[in-house]
Each structure stands twice: as structure tokens, then as C-alpha cells.
Amino acid sequence: MPHPLDPFLSLSRRGLLRGTLSVGAIAALTGTTARGTWATPVFAAYPFTLGVASGDPLPDGVVIWTRLAPEPHAGGGLPAQAIEVGWEVAADDRFRTPVAKGTALARPELGHAVHVEVVGLEPARPYWYRFQVGREISAVGRTRTAPTPDATPDRVAFANVGCQRYEDGFFTAFRHLSREDLDFVFHYGDYIYEYRNRRGAALPVREITGQEIHTVVDYRNRYALYRLDPDLQAAHAAHPFLVSFDDHEVDNNWAGDVSEEDGGPNFPVAVPREIFLLRRQMAFQAWYEHMPVRRAQLPRGPDMLAHRRFDYGRLVSVNVLDTRQHRDDQPCGDGTRIGCADRLKPDAQILGAARERWLMDGLASGRATWNVLAQQVMMMQRRVGEGPDFGFSMDKWDAYAAARGRLLRFVQENRVPNLVVLTGDVHNAWAGDLRTDFDDDRSPIVGSEFVATSISTDGDGAESRADWETLQRHNPHMRFFNNRRGYTVHAASRDRMTAEFRVVPYVTRRDAPLETRAAFLVEAGRPGVQRGG
Image (cartoon, helix red, strand yellow):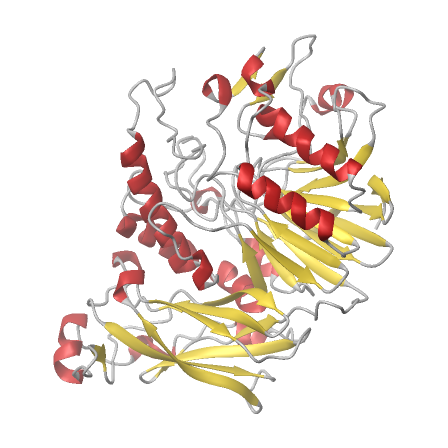
């Protein structure tokens, strides 16, 4: 029996055979309007190659997105003219009950991307949307608005995903994700990788051309490569996304205004700050062009507002964080280090002082049953090695221990209820407890953390790791580990939040089945991770 989402998840290619004109000949034949837009564009190839997406839902509206790119591997393949794009939102998947429509300009300055902030919708219900330009019609997407601020939904369901290196494997998990019953998807970052896989061996599974990317056209082409994947398109067409970014959208392990090439032992020739900020500006522009986000997230030079809050009634408050743009440089030269005193600096910042205060103020004044921090790098402590001198990763909250302590003590002192942290980055799945002092096993547990594995990064993976027992012995707050690829699904109700770790057994071949590897729950009013679902 066909899946009920199949009609709009199928990717239309009606326009591929229409027209044989080169892009250069289009403007001459179609003409332009007084404001410099194409009047009646005709495309040599289907312009909606990158699919559709929605995001940042509110009770009365949502962002819908597409990008015109008939030649996606060549910067889009369109001349430097604005193109008028029609859009439509309906209450049903066959568009018999339209509720909103209009036009938007796909501007060349933004790679001919379109971000429409639809308003006037009803809360907590699905809608369907599509775009049209000339004779071409996009695939259909489905989205969902949030409940009203005072509503108390019986259930809010969402997924945590990220880390999808193209050449490491197929995005099969996204196809399975498209069939989940969800209110939204949180994508924590590493949507693209700025370099080709360096490991050789049996990889790459899929070919990728070019070296490390630096220019806005380079970044656009890399996003286009990923966005062409039909499984990724299906996930975006099925659910609204809340997106943030990690490091690979710009440069591996960048921190604030410091490149990975920071003059340390691994990169003795440093990239000057002003040059890196130029690269960050171009990377942020390409990120904005390909994400379903609002005008508030449009980059201002090398800076971008990424942190924001979404309330799903009085049940779930989602704080989307940015742990890259405002952090201090990693101490002790990055990597995993033993005896790094600077990781304990009392004024360390991973969110930045202003964002830290914004988060604390929101947590203190919030009314939601569940307070979710949707962020990037592991918050719980992870001691590595046999001791007594342990190693710690300089790219995680372990390297900013004072910032973590301030936040978790604030949660305890202000009795912030039911803290759940969503994380990614490390390419495997974890679950664990958050304590005010990880060096004291008697200190209070004030929250729970669930780390999603990667969609494809690091290939097929394995069920566990050889040192898991050692890791757990030295980190008793850790409850679970798995090294397969996939994502995590959460469901919140008034008395519990569940976490189910969905995995696929392989990504180096297509059509892997989906399995639920483990299920956990957190009871309202009782912080800490428990087995069960």
C-alpha cells in the first residue's frame, strides 16, 4: 500500500524536457520588466532541482523555502536578474482549499533563493505548499504550525539529526525520517562538509569533486550537491526544520573569529583573522541561502543571529543555540589534551556572555513543562583514558567547564524544570545525566542529554566501541552508546519525554532498513535518564 506522504514526497521533474534554450538566450526571448525581473521566464532545465523546505514554525505562520537552480553544480546557472516566483499554501495536499498565496523575488544576490514568511495561518495544524515560476511547478511540501502560547498539547514529537558527509554514505536515514509523525526536526549542524573526505581506504562511497571550499560559489555548489539528494529532499518536504550550524558549514573546529588554521602545532601558518572572517561571511551567506529561516537570520557581514526560541504551547520550549560564533578559541591547541589548565578558566565562554544571559533569562521566566536546549557539542563530561590523568576534548563543553558549571548551577538554583539537552557532532549516539559537578558523583542531577548519531559521517559504523566499558567506568553519568548511523526521535507529554535511537545497519549501500536500537525516558520532575519508552 502506498505511504500517504508519497504523492508529495515524489520529486517532480516535469520541467526537465521543456525548452531547449540555453540560459544565455532566455533573457533575450522573454524580456524583463521595468524593475529588472524576468517577465515570463523559460528554463532550459527544471529550476526546482533542490526541492522545497519549511522551517521556524510559529502559531500563525512558517517559513517556506526554495532556490532556483537549473544548473545546480554551476552556481545555479541563472543570469544576474531577479525572478518573480509564485507561492501557494493550502489546507489540503491537493490544493482544493488554498489559504495563502503571493509572489516573491528570487534575487541573484542570494543565489536565487526564496524565503517566504507566511502569516495568517491557524495554530497546530498541517499545511501544504508549493512554488511556481513560468510554466514550472515545484514539488509539494508539507509543514505544520506550532500551538498557541497558552495551549497544552497532549504530545509534541520531534527528531534530532545532523552530520551528513556526502561521500561517506547514502542519506537513507532521511527517507525514513520523512515517514515519522513529527511536529518538527531539529538539525544541529554539519549540514555540509567543507573538505573532501581525507581518509581514503574504502571511502568515498559517493564521489565529490574539488578541494576545500572558500568562496560563496564554492559553498553554494557544495550545498547544491547535498540538496540534490532525494532522501534529504524528502525529509525537508515532510517536516518543518529548526536549523542551526556547527563547524563544517564554515571550517573544521573554527571558534569565534579563529580558523582551524590557527598557528598551532597542526597548522603553523595561521590564517589572518580578517581573512577568516571573509570566509565566514561567504559561508554564512550560502547557509542562509539554503536554509528555511527568517529574515532575522540574514547575515550582517560575518555575523549572524542564530540563537532563537520556539515555544510549543506550555509543553515544550526549544532554545536553539549557537556554540560556534561567540565561543573563545579552543584551549591548549584543540584536539584531546591531558592536563590543560586553561579548560578551567573561570571566565570561559562557549555561548558568549550575551547569549548566555539570554538563555538563562528565558529559562528562568519560561512556563513550559520541558526546557530543551537544541545545540551542537557534547555537554556532559567525557573523561578519556585510564587515568589518573584524563584527556578531554578541547572542542566540547569540557573545554569550557566554567561556562557549563554556570549554566547547570543556574538550572539548579532557579529550579528550572525538566532540562533536556539535544546534541550531535561526535558521529555516534549517547545518553547521559547532567550534574552540577561531574567530579562529584553525589552532586545533583539537573538534566539529561541525548546525543544523536550522524546521518552518514564515518560510514557504516559499529554497534559499540572497544573502550566503552572503560569510558562508562570513568564517566558513570553516561548510560548509552551506539555507533550506527541514524537519528533520534523524541516525544514529550506532560509526564515524560521519550527518546528512541533510530539506526540503519549500513550507509555504504542504498535502501537500508530502519531499526530502533534503544529507548529511554525522562520523567517530569525527576531529572536523569531511564531505560524504557
